[in-house]
View 1 (tube, rainbow, N blue to C red):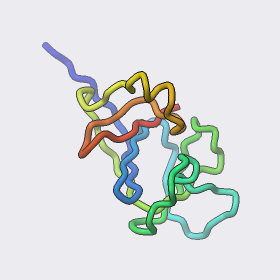
View 2: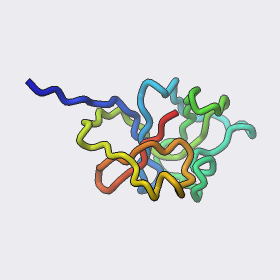
View 3: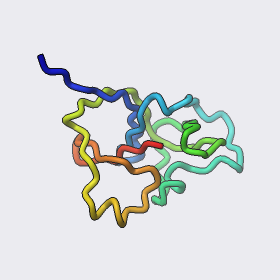
Length: 118
């Protein structure tokens, strides 16, 4: 009998880009009803240009990240289950030169998307 491992994740969509975070690392996500100055945008924290203001305006908390106030972002968030066959280790070159925080692996979806984990 073969067992396939699956990883419960949260898929974040910022514009045309997807990011995955293991679901057990996400504390909560809520609609933004007001913006506080001390909460960074997820795109800025990742070192990316700001995403378009489309979809929902959300506030995401991932305590393991060390960002206590969480992040704001415009986009979508959904729970997904990733089969192990869709998760790939980072190529050695990416391990040494990529500056995307918490990048641990790549997920094969429509392209290859980052899997962030702390």
